[in-house]
Length: 230
Image 1 (cartoon, rainbow, N blue to C red):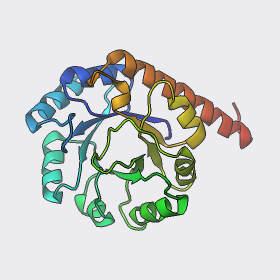
Image 2 (image 1 turned 45 degrees about the vertical axis):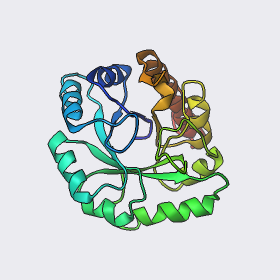
Image 3 (image 1 turned 180 degrees about the horizontal axis):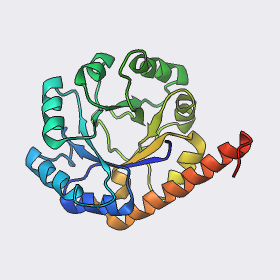
Image 4 (image 1 turned 135 degrees about the vertical axis):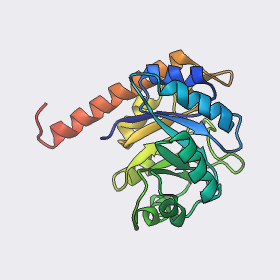
């Protein structure tokens, strides 16, 4: 069901437990070059801690152009709920993994809706298709977590045709506007819930609350416009 909130870049068990307490649907662990990268040992500790809570978020492992066998091994070891492909992985990798996939597509400045659509569509042309497409901001040197937004009008057009999790520069102050503009399947945040490069429990709670409220308003508007009951 739409309204998914993903908090990414957990580096410690404390981060992940705070994300779970905030009500995140998904938490992300980064296994690619990044200030938020975790080792396998750290990831094991985080996963064990998270699986002790009552309100259990799904755990996603984020990779960038990693070998399929490596991702399968990590996913199996950690019992990940999904794998996020955040590089230039082709549709064949989605189908070869044998794991639920979130596929990131990074949108360049000035890129047209049709150009993005042509990059997204092949992932849904075969089976299995990704769980969702993560639309993020393109950066020439960084795969994600830049804190920069892109043209939400492009994202809105793509979200009308495919399940989109919106990422890129989201924070407490703008997530409601992003949801109202794009009507995505979900939202994804990393740097927007950090203070001085560290995850902040208060920002996590505030972000999830703002996103939940915005999704509720968006769904209510859709039901009203379609003649559904309230």
